[in-house]
Image 1 (cartoon, rainbow, N blue to C red):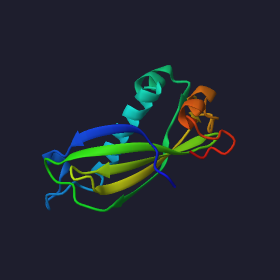
Image 2 (tube, helix red, strand yellow):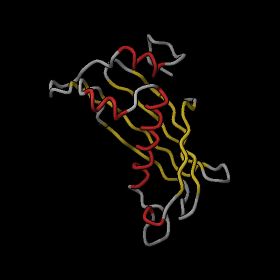
Image 3 (cartoon, rainbow, N blue to C red):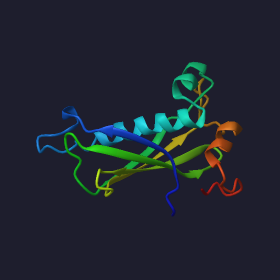
Length: 145
């Protein structure tokens, strides 16, 4: 699948991100992926703070996975590319590439976000304006980006 970057987010690996071996603790990758997700949603016109305050529907994370390919160390500046991979009727999948200063991919991650009714009513279709924004130029009949 082609990785079509829709948003870029940058961060620096801080001391509190690292473990005793001096590399970024594996769980912190998801914190940085979430920061990139928040930046992406804001660029898309759906800032999470506004969505949460509106409390009509939520986008809980229902699946997350990552592959670690290289070390991220204290002081490294990392670029996170965010791409929309799949858009369904009730959920969407984002892909993340973590790239170091030298341009090498250090990690990749994927998150699946479902749409849920805020009142606890369970699964909810993605609002059409959000679905359209996520699809961009993709074929809306397949959801493939």
